[in-house]
Image 1 (tube, rainbow, N blue to C red):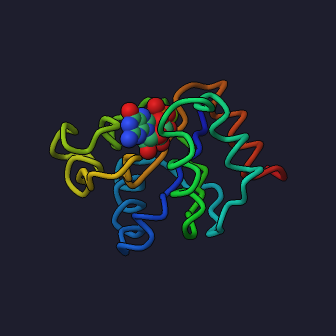
Image 2 (spheres, rainbow, N blue to C red):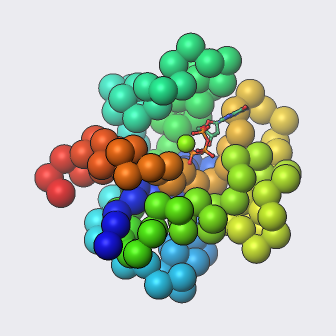
Length: 138
Ligand code: GTP
Ligand code: MG
């Protein structure tokens, strides 16, 4: 079995979509093993998004991510990394398939960063690194 880090981003928390998003994760059969609502600081976000440093959307992304609380969740299950990314849909919510979180609930707000509701780790290495950052005790 495998674990992934899911972040319910500030736009989703603000819009009251936390329950709907967790419902989809649980309905798919994944187990929640940790969850914490918190406002991330710069150091955590810089580490979390290190791969994007220098990209044009990096500063708006970090500003957005610290604009309000995020729900950080560790979910567990067979192939949950791939499975959650399938549930989430593609990065750009306009093109995300209906049936996905971003496809059903997200839209392009015309901002410098895609406010696309959720984050999910993209590989076993990313998952281990990100879970260590957000849940150092786990
Ligand atoms: P995450 O699960 O959030 O990591 O999304 P992802 O893996 O689909 O995207 P990626 O890791 O490439 O980018 C991280 C986040 O940066 C995205 O979720 C968006 O919020 C934002 N982002 C990424 N690429 C772009 C882009 O080309 N334009 C804009 N405006 N925002 C982007
Ligand atoms: Mg990513």
